[in-house]
Image 1 (cartoon, helix red, strand yellow):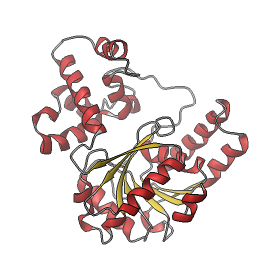
Image 2 (cartoon, rainbow, N blue to C red):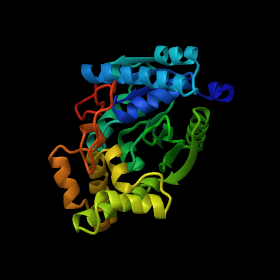
Image 3 (cartoon, helix red, strand yellow):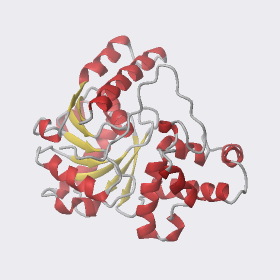
Image 4 (cartoon, one colour):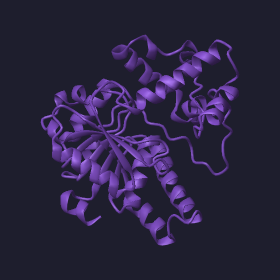
Length: 304
């Protein structure tokens, strides 16, 4: 990582201790970055630290980490309760709160007050340009869209806003490479590349289920067997979180039209609290795994 260390201080803040925040914190800690996670909720904070420790232990079992490396990972991650507690001048701060524009914009403005060298958002669909409107240094702001589970999926989608500088895009690319990820770079268009491709397939699968075309299991099996997808669109939606799917669908429907309008079955499941794997039920049943820490989900309260 020498090149990266010369270009950027290897310290990171992650704002939001939900599923994505935990994964992002973990991969940076594995890469040797001093990592601070902002999570105001005490129960979620305990769960995220437990998840990081357990994941590092599993890495040792799978031969991915040595015992010394696993211990270093846990020692590299600390939690604070507010953005104001983050150290000033961190190399990078990544925002990873729920896909709600006003919340993200508020959080990003608070992040900028900590004077990081670079700011990234993990948004999967919201406009980088729109999010940057209240920032004093939009040239240092970029989208870094990670994928769940972050420790397993090897890609980061870099999203360049109109004001994002060439240096910021290159830094983001080099950082992603240093933590073992491959990148694509896209312009700031609704849904970017990955969310549009992924969501349109998932929404169509939901409409098929709603119309009685086939069972959830058979719809997923069709994609896995016929098209060699590693997982079907309905199970993937459960893993992503049906509430997350709903937020993204609503946002994309506003800009791209009715083809992204959320199906009634998705709205009904979210209203009923059937959010997928994290709630134990979505399009499929997800029994709790032994020794699994409590569900870690981003909250939508203020993080300051």
